[in-house]
Length: 113
Image (cartoon, rainbow, N blue to C red; front, top):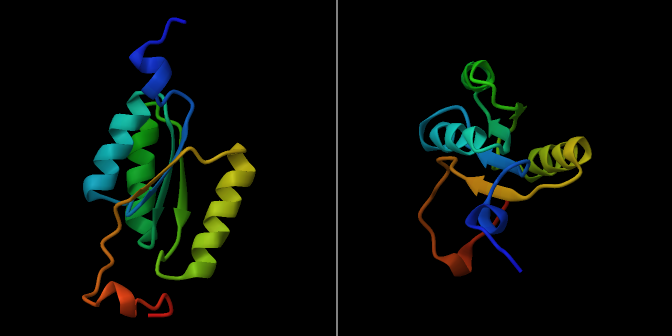
């Protein structure tokens, strides 16, 4: 068999979901992966910044969708994942870049917070 790095690790036509997609690290990653042929799905709760980032990526020829979502809300996350899956038929990669945090012992974690 003849394997190449691209065939083993390439992102061409892979569906990528990025939380925190309106700016910062996620928008840079989206641009990089999009330029390598990935299908980008940006997730953020700031709709105006999300739209601006999406528009900027589209201007460069990147295939990108946007999803307005607060990732601390499980119902919103489920909606976005289900809609993205229905649209593309798969989700190949999830990158969590959203800036949501609190200090608490892992044994005390409660997703309702």
